[in-house]
Length: 365
Image (tube, rainbow, N blue to C red; front, side, top):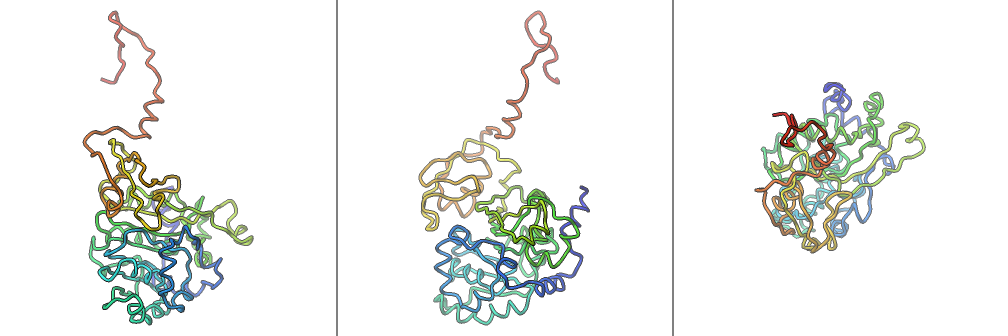
């Protein structure tokens, strides 16, 4: 597929304000239709669930999504919540960052935003803060021009990347505002195949969080083109569909993923080895036994783990270094698992030898 066709598949040619207003009108209140993230003990850490009690009932009842993309170690951070709706996750993040942190809630729908804004003073009082640490912004995730470059520690989003009419702009803005070592931590729905164009462009199907789902392979290509070399999916669930929805998308499976994308100059498109290792200290309250790194990889407490360069970028060169012990450096390169597999597949030389039993033309030079 050529680059333009790939772009057009996920792009809706409408002004963001008009697009989001149209999708909002088409969104129902049925949880299956409007919320594709899972509200479970895994997708919502216990510490986040406890903090829900501090948030106004109207804010929670008006919020369409489930699950909570709250990464660990948010205290004192600057956070942006994209597509914040009525602000439930924004107010959760405000409690995690504390009075010294700052949370921006960005929402294109004025009606939803007004619900969150209405409770600002009350929520700050409930949290015990003397001044506001939340600012709601009426705008779209595709344009974060109110924020300077490299000014944000964490970007969160809850099933809103899926909705974006311009995913390239969305990702580009996320990367621009993140600091070195900053993290985009979000929950969304992805697909096992590319959605047929006529369905991907259908606003009704986008409103139910399925038509705009991105094929996971294309997501990888998109973030790599934007400058993110790698991504991880610490939590992964099959997305349940109704019978009618299965008929709309025959042969396509959907998955709800919590995704971590780190902005780091140390990360490469393949995990390179340098003999490094890490040990998780178990001090994160929500993860006392193991740190969830990827859907098929966790770091058990007090157990040494070999660390490739991409693992070390997170565990030793970002805010996560507070809970990891790291040993080794990047002075001696030890290859990579992927390259080692290629080298091991090389066939033994079986050519002509000269009188000194030396291979002739055994190499290119």
